[in-house]
Each structure stands twice: as structure tokens, then as C-alpha cells.
Image (cartoon, rainbow, N blue to C red; front, side, top):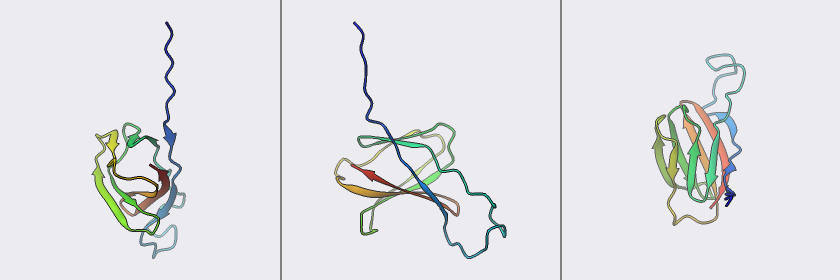
Length: 106
């Protein structure tokens, strides 16, 4: 008997920006943009690619209000979000002055 498993894993597309951007590019910041992290969402589980840096993870509602935050260490590849969240949310990952922003639906 052959078993196939369809995964609902979805890649989260992130935009990249520099937080507290008060310096022109090239003056303290790299000239080329940082590559966004590779993170998948499956139900309420975020899957990070192994070997990622440490991130501060923030989930915000559509009004920009913070509703969940946690720290994701480089050793963690799975983060389970609270099952009480339903709807569309902003997901932010911070790494130093880099800010990665995306949208998720739970």
C-alpha cells in the first residue's frame, strides 16, 4: 500500500527592511539587501530552516497591535503559535537592525 501525504506547508514571503534607518546605505549597513529567512507555516507551526540566526518573533494584528512575541534561538527549527489566534496577521522577525515582515493566515 502506497501512502502519500499532502502537506499544507506554505512558504512565508518576507520583505526586508532596516529598522531605525537613519543612515544612508553604505554608511554602516551593507550595500546589498539581506536575504529573507526561509520559514514555512503549517497550521499553527512555523518551520525554520536549520542553521538560521536568532530572531525575535512578533505577531501583530491588522491594526499593528502586538499580540504574541517570543525569541527563536538558532537551535530551534519549530515554533508553535497559540491556537487561539485566528485570522490574518503580520509576522515580524528581527535580527539586529534587520526587520523581516510577512503576512500569515491562521
